[in-house]
Image (tube, helix red, strand yellow):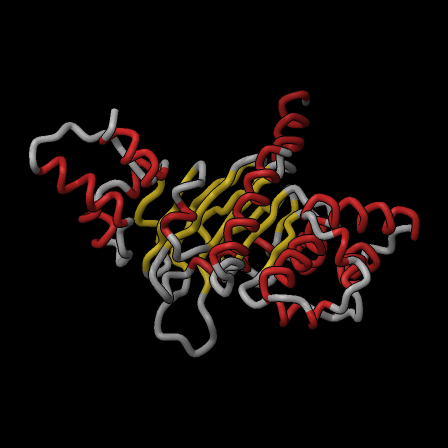
Length: 282
């Protein structure tokens, strides 16, 4: 009985994807074909893949936006195969999307961030605390009374993330939330993801930027609805020819390191320009 109780408790801290299949109506092929994955609390994951690979569909299945065609998704102990499970999932597996404008529904930032907790039926003082905590965590307390639609794109995305965090989730899913941002705003969002990881929140980041994937604990690459690679960033991203074979553009720094290796230099696995420069001048 103790083992069963322990297993049930652990299931609340992870997302399990088992033989997941999904097909959009009228599509000629499955969007997801037998996906088996496990995501742990307090880890940062990067989901990579060319357009149409199924990475956004997978994220939506993990959040309960989409119901599995077959197989199962257990999100923090909730089965998304049933309607009740899908309704409950967003309280523990929150999600932010590519375009924050599609998520704005309120007239002020603090009202926007309060939207999710209010839908949970929480007491006003609890909602107030959650809103203040989320705004402070994201670093936008000074924007509380501003109108969301008058903010910059980067600020809007931070508001969307604050709204997701006000749900006090176990996991945050990011569906290309940095793709419409400039470098400065992207950097701020990525720093926030690392902060959340340190707080024990699991982050699953769908992205097409390999430099963002390099920051993750684990990289998962999808193609045509299947997992074709998974491992550490160094294990997946440092071989330019392998990266190209997966339909992705390799990092420039890995191409340089690879060419230096061909010239006979013993180059370590490098994913960052600063690491390359440190090695060159060591």
